[in-house]
Amino acid sequence: MNKNHAKTGKQYLLLMVRLLLVKPAFSYLEVIIVMIILTTMLHLQFNNKIHSTSFNSTESKIKILISEFQYLKSKAIKEEQSVILIFKPHTNTIKIIDSHRNNYQPLVIKNGIVHPYTNLKYIAFDKHGHNHQFGSLYITLDNTMYKIIFHIEKGRMRYEKI
Image 1 (tube, one colour):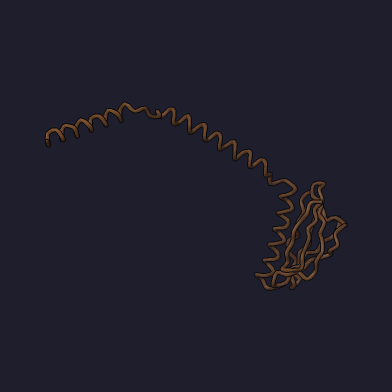
Image 2 (image 1 turned 90 degrees about the vertical axis):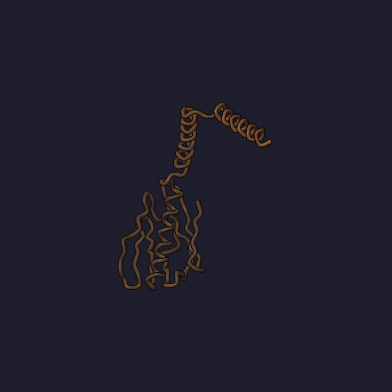
């Protein structure tokens, strides 16, 4: 009985080896072709995504400007002193000073100006990040007008395209 069992075990092993050798698989060339196709598809997908969300669009420029305002607000909190942003209509710069009267490099609005509709002459962030006045700052970027709205509660701000 052991002889027959050993014989069938060897036969089974030989059969499995033959199946593994005979079983079709991908060749290296086929794998390389598949990888080239996948790489090309991924490249086209990411390239299209990058071009669709351009960093030079007016939407991204206004978001960058608001992030600059957020940075100045956090600077006021960190340094525990007020930071004041001064808006002058028909200019492309926003002047920045702190409570110790230190002048900072002004914010430059690239391809844009502060529109005269603006009902704020300045906005001040205190050492807690709050501003104590509310109003709207109108910015014209690349012939598109945006309204940045400053809220009193917690120094929040948002923008709208007009």
